[in-house]
Length: 150
Image (tube, rainbow, N blue to C red; front, side, top):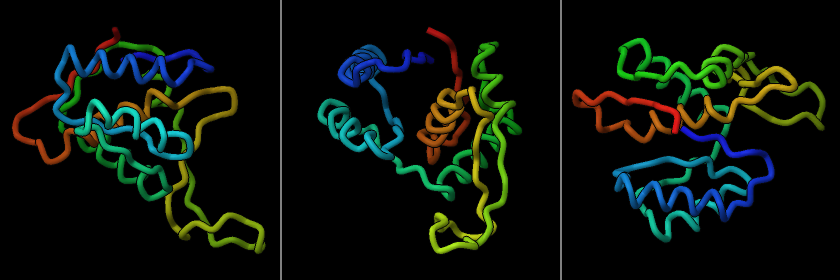
């Protein structure tokens, strides 16, 4: 688990992932492909095609956090006692979306959960954890996911 400072050049992030792949021979991974993530995932897949991109939508986020919650309830995830990650998990909030009232409002399916975090806080580590759990989907067996700080 590593959080890069805001403004870190994407080439540094890609180089870090390439080094992780070399050391650990990653079997499967997931990466947020939304917005600028699309070009990032294209670069990563040049050396690690087993890492897939996932576009974040309200439905995708709902599915990711449902899977994360299920794995936590099954005690199939072991987390390090990292204050930032635990804070992000606890601070995540949600609300049910509604049908747009004005034509200018963003359209989302009514009843879909919309996730957000309080202003001035972050949720990157939470979504990274959810993506890591998603990457293990289909490899259920007796595997357990261990998250540690590096």
